[in-house]
Image (cartoon, rainbow over all chains, first blue to last red; front, side, top):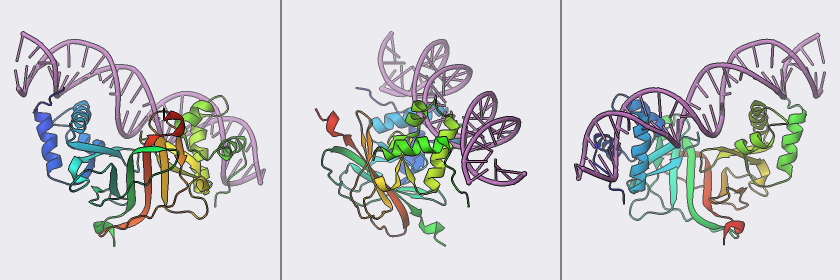
Length: 126
Length: 126
DNA sequence: GTAACTGCAAAATATTTGCATCCTT
DNA sequence: AAGGATGCAAATATTTTGCAGTTAC
């Protein structure tokens, strides 16, 4: 099993995600860290952290990949349904601490689900 | 206001979507139609048909753009919540004819929502 | 020491744009 | 005729891959 090493890149990214419950897109991270680490490394570290269950990822309205703390998504125990909010004005993307029942559908076996709510965040409601 | 012209490209794409309630990714359409029309045209016609309210689009698990009939999504009246199913094995993507209540969240004004259910379709359940 | 990790360059993939030309109304 | 639509090439953007060199354990 791949043990994840505490490299400088890993520590940097972990610290960033420790400081917020919001989700961050890979594009933003690559831009923000382009002096500190290579974009390939950003992609690879995020993937590793997701494999380890430390982060989780989802696709935003824009088709970009977003990451957030695994438990930033659901407070106590993890649900397979990840509800996320994305502000259409400022782009702020947050994990919502609400539990939603995954609907069951005949003819299909549902493994997981993603719910993306689009609207305006507190700051952009004017 | 832009009146949409009944060009050969428009007719071709309309016919394709008339024949199914499933969603189709732009990538598949571009590939399937590359002898009949240019990929740029595929992108532009789909955009126009969405503007006209004939199709609607959403982002799949893979980050790709998918289109389906507007009313393939919800049977009678249109909900802002679009529930879609995507098969993790064969990639089949369908609009689900179920109504789901959009949850309201404090501090946010929710305009619309996308629910993507991932699992296995009937054919891939073995 | 060795397997994991990183950086760099290049490839792969998806989508958009500019512009000249063509077609629908 | 005029404005919308198309094709083609090139640009943009995101993500992935290969490989040589470095680092954590």
